Amino acid sequence: MKNRLILTLTTTRGSRQFSLGKVGKYLFGLFVLMSLASFFISNALLVKTSEELTSLTQDHQLLANLYTDAVDSRESVRTELDKLANTLNAVQADRAKVTDERERWRRPLRALELELGLEPSTQMTLERGRELRRIANERLFMLRGLPNGYPIEGIAPSDRFGMRKHPVTGERKHHNGIDFSADRGTPVYATADGAVEYAGYHKSSGYGNLIIINHNFGFKSYYGHLKKREVNSGSLVRKGQLIGYSGNTGLSTGPHLHYEVRYLFKPLDPQPFLDWGMENYTAIFEQVEGISWDSLRQFAALTLPTPSPEAPLAASP
Image (cartoon, rainbow, N blue to C red):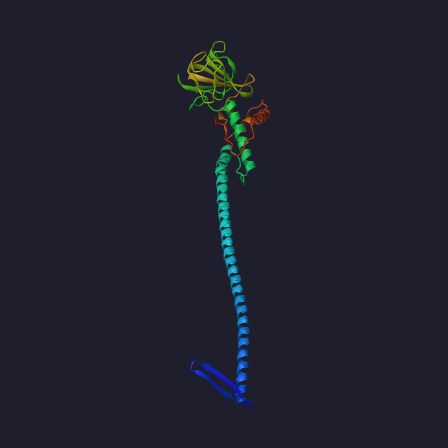
């Protein structure tokens, strides 16, 4: 029995013994060693595989988190881009609105330049707008407060200002105004805003029914030989207001309107005042002497507020 390996197998039917020789014993030992080695190697590989699987799971979770962050970041960037696009659209809309607003006040100002007879400006700036409105308001103020335009419509003067032979007395004397031959009852209008100083029959002057209106800065206008008066002494009148009707009262050879313009009681030639208006505003300053026009204009400028481009103009004369 020496050098033999006996294996005993026990079953329900009994026990059996098997005897292995030396070679079998070595083979059996080798099998056992290989089984143990396989067991330990398998366990080692299983542990390593498990660790690698855990690492892969962690890497997968990290990638998943990175992907989620990337998606969120992309959505955030998209949201920011949408906000930026909306802001840009709003800015462009505001810019277009501002451009429309600028054009809205530029168009009437350029039209105002033409009406004022001024050279068109190369660029319509806010400062230019203020200057145009200052000029326009000054002119409107002066043209409302000082005699200008015709007191009677559609009729040319029939007798001028200056020395002449009086048609009734035959005496050569100075004619202080301008006559308009007109039928009785032709409407007569005030040539500027003012207060009626006198409205009545003026026998001593020969003017018959006479209206005298006080205007700004010492100017007066006279309307003589009227048939009928529509205003009374002390009345306030506006430029263009109906004040009476032409006639043939007083020292007169026929129906007509006698019209005068005076400054500080001094008779002036009414013709430049008849022709005076917005388009030739500065011409009268050279045509009519004896008046400190610069002082009057400076005073008017001080009276008027400095307008903004959006401020409304004074009422037209």
